[in-house]
Image (cartoon, rainbow, N blue to C red; front, side, top):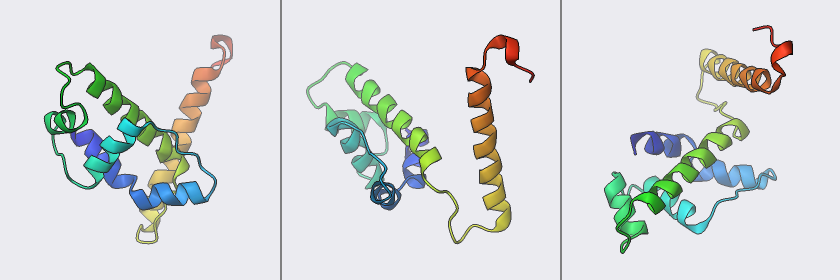
Length: 120
């Protein structure tokens, strides 16, 4: 849950709305969106609390774990779409984010290359 709370603190409601205004598409189901809202509003702090709110009659943790994984995947995908350069970041922070964004893009590209073409 800590990892999810950290992602939600980075990818705020305002940033998601800005992404939508720029033509980004937010594809998430009702339960995934509900979990985001619960975490963003601080209404839940543990997996047990979230599960009891989202799936009050469900004994299995599987449906909750599925929703939690969907939300984490969704938020991680949005990290690359949302501009992380905020006015309050100084030049070193902006360079740090840009370098890691480029590094991640290179790693993805390397993974898609045929094994015979890989140099690194």
